[in-house]
Length: 512
Ligand code: MSP
Image 1 (cartoon, rainbow, N blue to C red):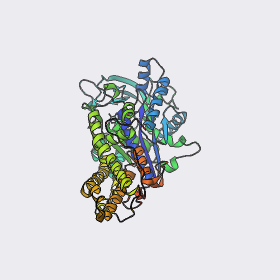
Image 2: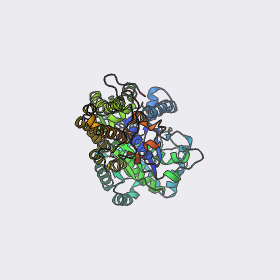
Image 3: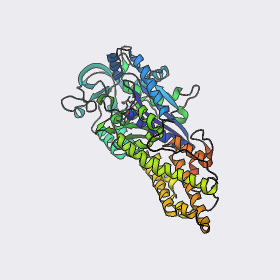
Image 4: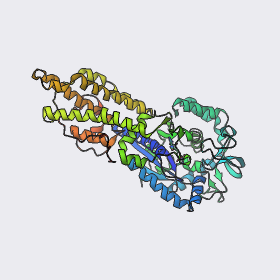
């Protein structure tokens, strides 16, 4: 089984911010989980480097577009490891292999009869690199996303005959209801299609920073067509000597936020149809991270620097917070206060403390040996079906609900400590069996939740599993992380070693 997941490729007109980190983290959780399932995974992210937004930003900074792209692509590339994200490749649309592959695919689209010359006129947002329809425009010709004034543009362009795909797109949506999720986004995309599709410009004559149109030297491809194709072209050269399309095309999941819905749910499938290529299984559309009620974006100035947050709290804490606090798929506000609350109450207390207490008790009462006794059936029952449920939810992109399923068990284990009061049992020789069952049950419960939490908090999860006897964990495919071992009772720890607090209170640990 293979699993190919992508993030949008990010514009290099500005530095990375928390919004970009969010999508990359989410894709990483999915990639890691699918590796734990033993699947063949390919996780792609990268940078979108051509087009007007980058050309304009470069001009403002007094550098060439390539200089700006080189500088900012490095910053995006550096972000992934800081987030502990395990992308298999980082594509840059300025890669010559990408450029060539875009030209090949779009020539095929032309040969198939879906390109024609025409005159374009309309309201254009240079930051979105997008023409806006009348219904999208806000307060007197402004962009609904950037709130800047739109310009009236007129030029001779080659057009992509999007209108020719009206029926086929409607059929796609009818036959593949999971093509776009969540449902509200499916509805939005479908109603856009049903409102009637117009042809869209495929090339731009005024711009030089882009992929040259092979059949007309005066034009470059409109950046969105060049950009969308990254998901496909990357597979042709990500691993030298291999054609990964055989294994990974079509993609299982494109992750995006709702700002780029139209491109991924309407243009993209139509473009693939026009090129005779198979369509992806799913576009998952998540919501916006909001600060003070507005979408975080560089142009609005309300950005949180993910590098700074991670410096202070570590990557696991950020990964956990973003997917826990904001229901994945919906918009949600983020703030440093909320972050610190989650950190303290859930990571430090619910989880970190549970692990430390259990390990300390095993060290104190049993010299670190975990009693090999029958586990508490009442707790075992609470873990029934958990692996399947978590896998199903992650498979459906429901990362917040999946995390909640695990957290219910973390809380249950905490309650179990309170119910059993092992420190009292330890004082009563007649209750040795109860003590041993309690400690063994806790150790096994913690191991199980930790195997499942690895996808969200890989660094601390692996540290804790090592303390529970799993040894060094090299990567997501380590046997100790295999999803089948996340069944309660599958691999009870036999011995534990001491561990520093996983999520220390007050003075959070620096990045791992
Ligand atoms: N370059 C295009 C995408 C081309 S994909 C073929 C682009 N780039 S972008 O830099 O603007 O990135 C947009 C994406 O970044 C969003 O779709 C989302 O994945 C992520 N986010 C940026 N800001 C965000 C928030 N405030 N909240 C949630 N996601 C955010 O569009």
